[in-house]
Length: 303
Ligand code: DON
Image 1 (cartoon, rainbow, N blue to C red):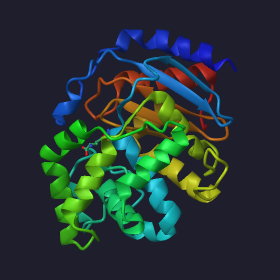
Image 2: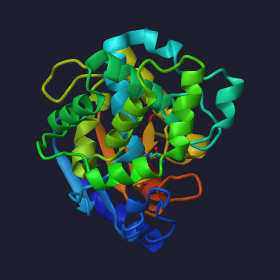
Image 3: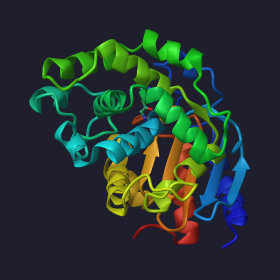
């Protein structure tokens, strides 16, 4: 298949929606990004990379980091992890507090903020340096040694992080935090602040298209664990829009409020699209549209 031609066609098709949606403003440092930006990259399991638009431009990966922290914690902790976090769609916004009380401090899934805080807490205990472990992993998998945190974004998140702080303290009250809450929050904010391009991210999630095998051939996840992560992405990766995303795109995907979305086609390739204008549920408007067009044009989906 001529992936470069397909990506160009997708880019043309999404032009009318570029600039639609609203850039995230609850993290003030994200509000400065131009909503008309658009990039898309595809990395094959063999290691070839194709791209269009701003595909080499770093952006804030935000909640896309949650896929990688889950994979890193699962690879070390195995099924024990699932005692502290569920694997059901929440049907609620990513930063919602309501379900946590009904469900005694056990978050619905690892991709809502509460669940990701539990995963960061676990990764911190398992490695002693959750954020450093994540950065080193992403540098290795993307093949880009320059992947790094954005300290301005991290500081902005910490300053405006009352909701995440509330979630973490609430879970601590149920005994579902091993480390001190400020330590977990700090690692979480830094993880979300990582800046990567579409090319970096498409390469970095290649292990999910290779059934758990890393870029250098070493194994991160068992085949079964890679299936688990992909399944949770499909059902929970775009929060209360996961049903519509599965319906339109038909791929495991994970969004972030920086406007990025990654998606996986097992055995074949990984994709990343970026455009900062978000819909009401925190997913990139042009990003979802581009992935919808991609799977419709190519017929490539998991279904
Ligand atoms: O914690 C937060 O709210 C942000 N750092 C990440 C949220 C996010 O990306 C949700 N995804 N659409």
